[in-house]
Length: 427
Image (cartoon, rainbow, N blue to C red):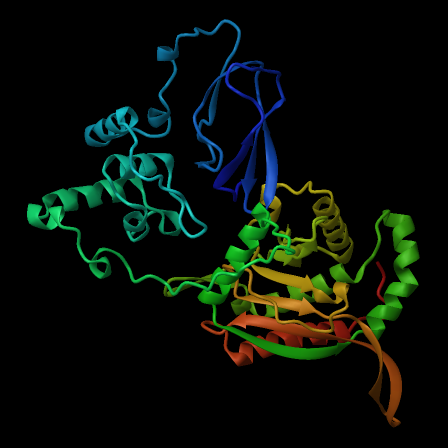
């Protein structure tokens, strides 16, 4: 899955128990953030057991299914139990797991939401012990992203059982049992002529990430206009030769990416993340590049160590990632590890925008459309009006850790690199 990918969500099983599977044949489909992938079988055999269901989140390295190959014993007792396949358990936890498996499930089903994921084991313990959805949602979690772990729910049950019986028998007022409810949004009523379209899985992910980013970072913007006439003319001069020699189209994107990478090297405190009260200063400059997908959604593949690439290397990397994005062939690791993001809103005709920060980064730069406009040109002989190619750049940054001076200086550095372009540069 790639070294930076820790977990994935099962989106569909392509094979059922009892079906024969060929070597390298896809068994199931998984999703990591915005990338879908098929998981092929490494062996030929018969699928005898699925250890996870659709929508379960599994860690990289976990066993997700058992395939019986020719010559193996078919007795199910010889196969490891799912609960014991990942990590050793204490006797108390193992006993709870056995009880949960055997219990009749009569409580209302526990479901994961966009904000909180519950593992199958946590759901089963909650059902067995009569823990309600609201009670589980209010439970503090110590796992990744605040997830409720097995130990969290067992500790909660111990504290609950140790409380006086009179309190346990009488439900506490809602204000004491859980956090205050968030104000509910008024429902939108559809008329008979309206079409109701369910959001795609990626659409839901994007919506969640955008709301989470706005709630996490204090967004503020700086705008600046750059004269890119030299770059425009230089690209027109060399693009045919470059395409003939390298077999690649030279677009503006790698040129802008090179300037951003240089500016990040000059201002390393823009290449950071926030973790609690600590600032993580990133060693590598990994540039995210927003790219359009065939369905209209956007994805952000990452150019790793962008400051170490020359313009030819940057061009090849940009074209490769953009091409695989259009063909839905990106791998999970291609969208991981970004430290700063660039989005080209000019592709859609916008002259500027106010992009939302791609968490856990602290800045994102929007490139506006390049326009041919009349502008004041300063020369030793005096000022005059000339036709120039200009573009706006919109820099959104996290005001918790990036002040206006740093945010403005950074985008000014990008402008300076672009305007100082060498018209005689060889490539």
